Length: 91
Image (tube, rainbow, N blue to C red):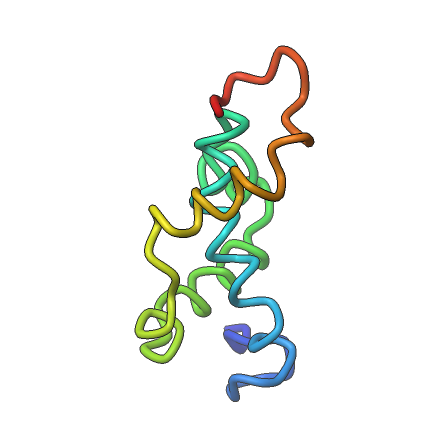
């Protein structure tokens, strides 16, 4: 069995930095791009999928997650210019 985190069994600074991005991918990719992060991307990468699950399942990450509505509102303000023409997502 593989350890759940990048540096083994312990949640590291690497996960602290990555956690907000992992959380955003699950919310913003489906909304803006029409991409199911887990089904369309992670299913092809077992280790990456396990790592993102370990991050998402960690209590401290769940307790500190930004509410989806706030995350989308912030993304609309700052990332809207990156919506590719023809992308399945919406603004």
